[in-house]
Image 1: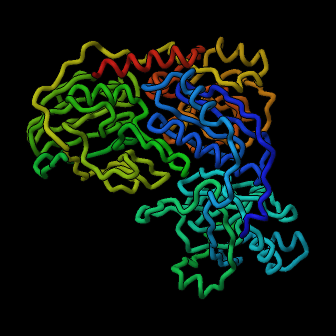
Image 2: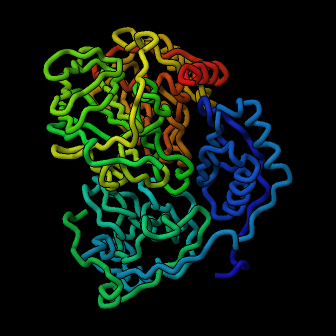
Image 3: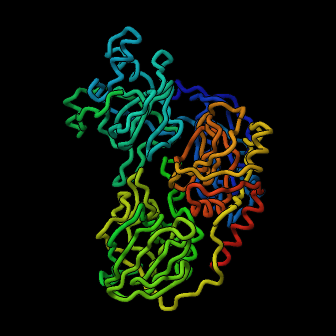
Length: 245
Length: 310
């Protein structure tokens, strides 16, 4: 993973939108693109610094940052001014701003039932799908759905697969899935409609760890295929999915 | 730090549809996908706490619909506020808003809604529970908060401990207004409102809306005229409290404390925090209207509410 691979988009036009009594949306872009993330990350840092104690929550996503400010200390005019001041002369963050993770994954039909289906659709082997899913770096665009769940992308266009028509009621924690051109890991057992390829033993959200959430927006992630034995050694749960897609 | 002792326990005897330990919620964590949580009717929790001299967001019990009962193992002062769920102390009716003494061996019970939907029980100094990410708010979906720290709702046999004592309970300065019928909820209009069709905007603010049965701590669905928006699927972005999102079926969903942190449906705006609290007291079938408000007006009313507790 080197900086040389990272594209950075042109400087965005910054738009502010009212979204609630104590919240403003900072809109930077209009489309999903990894090249936008250095700008989103830079804006995230600048806003955290600019607001300091007056910030209640800051939620970066693919193209926007939701600024939830303390209305006991700021009115909307003051919050808008604070955002504009913080973002003057914004420069894209270096990729070093996001951390890098290698996530070992046991790719297997028993825990990733869509693996053979996607292989069949493309007329290639499961090994080929595994290779193509694990050969590139992904960027964490946003966290949501459940604590520590990161929406990552982009996967290669040929692998893009729509969500399941009927979501599963229970998807095991650690399940690795794809939906359209994004990929993600289920951070806890939950319902879910992504196409599953495998499972990791890595805990994405661990209250006993200093970094409770392993991922943060802007982090870079690469998957590393491992065998069933290594998965078990790492503490992985090999229980097959209760429901087929 | 407050010291609790086991003598001061309230033992949960039965729970109704839902009883949860809630405080003001988790903040500064939504970028990690962790929801806000906290009391849906934060105004009533604030009053219950105020009656005992607690800070407004101190942990209490959110009792939905009723059916909840507990027995005191020690004498102490408690307070309730919010919805009138037919509370009784050893069978004698209690006012829905006020502080009262409970003696060792007495039972506090909630029957069913007379007005409103959720009652809040405050304990002196608050309910003892270990905070996680700054809050004890119970979020089952995230396995966070509550007495066990794992997101479990209260259950029979649970012991509620008070974190402090209350020497001099206060009296309610006025009866809080509970929504009964013709509830008007104030909506801070958002930038995306311009993408809705004119007729839909007219309908939004001029038609009655019904609270649907699909209502929980994540969100409340309204049924009424079909709203049309020119924005199709949007790229997911952060969702503020009270966001009024309109999925393709044209029926708005108001997103509350346990909402997911990001989402991709177009929004009319967001209910004011006071309107969110009022909505939490509206049973399915309640008719309500939406009225536009500016962030400035909403903030002024919000600050005036907080000022009552100083």
